[in-house]
Length: 94
Image 1 (cartoon, rainbow, N blue to C red):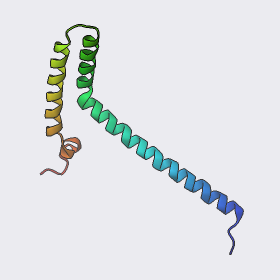
Image 2 (tube, one colour; image 1 turned 90 degrees about the vertical axis):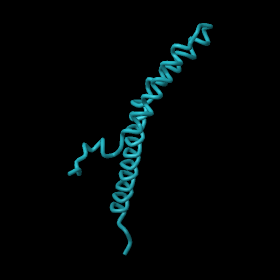
Image 3 (cartoon, one colour; image 1 turned 45 degrees about the horizontal axis):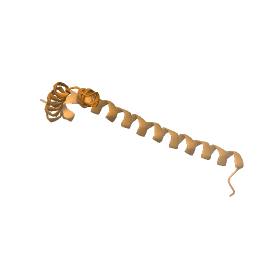
Image 4 (cartoon, rainbow, N blue to C red; image 1 turned 90 degrees about the horizontal axis):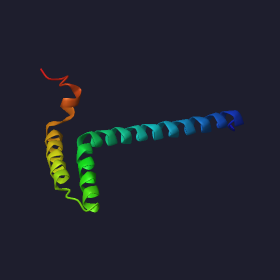
């Protein structure tokens, strides 16, 4: 039995909508991951950028480099302590 043109159009539109929904979900997951990385390493990036700017200007950027090192160590410590359980509030712990 041949497919009616209206039904074929509806199926194409539904498939297009499904593809758009999948794309939106992927974009949202990438955005969440980027926010998490920035939360952990944002201060490191800012300090390293400040150190490079001072060095390019001919000034001493060692203070900013030390701040970046301290922020990196703090971020590494946070990354070790965080797990999926810390985000769920230990809902299954008894």
